[in-house]
Length: 287
Image 1 (spheres, helix red, strand yellow):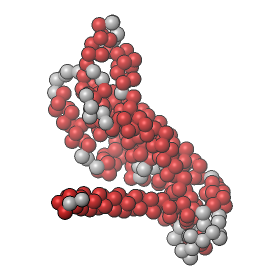
Image 2 (tube, rainbow, N blue to C red; image 1 turned 45 degrees about the horizontal axis):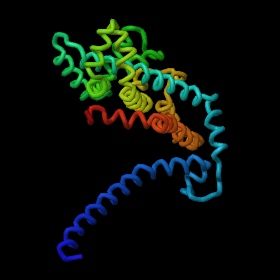
Image 3 (cartoon, rainbow, N blue to C red; image 1 turned 60 degrees about the vertical axis):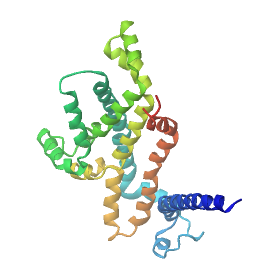
Image 4 (cartoon, rainbow, N blue to C red; image 1 turned 180 degrees about the vertical axis):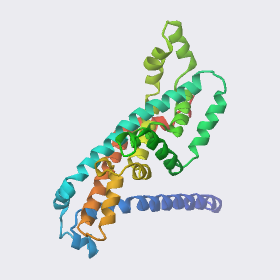
């Protein structure tokens, strides 16, 4: 190999090493907290405060699991069910609404369409915490404060999901297919439900996963809307227990175990639906 070839190869190897180092650091940054959570969930309270997480002694995983579901009369199980209802049902309905709205923005012509879509894009940039107080005032005016619906209804509408729905509709649903369905005598609702929605399946799954993650991790809205502990999601319930742990240290192991279990639905959802999610992210990239 000549000196010229060596000089050209050296920057390539250096760039590859830099990229690999950045990826390795990113992986460690992501996995180390999860590893700590798994190790801490298997320790009793004394081992947590002694920083003896790597030791094989004091293994209390099953004991912590039993204490978690027995604490405060099994309140964690109720919180978990609430989170599943808020997140899974809310994400499913919200994804259907978002994709339908995006489809309408893409395929239909109506007055001020682009101006309305501009409002949707503007709403994407509004932080959800800013909307908590107006939503609380609206819920208070309709008598929905401290009810299931005060948290469930607002999560059904997601401007970013509408934007993604339009992108997916443009990338997956050819106008020629819709015209052929109309020529065959299918109405607009039938065309959407039997033709377009099947093509939008990967996009629907992608919007569902984004909605599921956002709703499952939703904290501020339930904190504003709810005062009844039986209606809390997992995020708000663990926050309350963690606040009590400074006075009652027995809450520390159950908070850590509860945090570990709270991660599992998201991991399961992304694992089972990753095939659709990956294809959904490439919508419109290849014509």
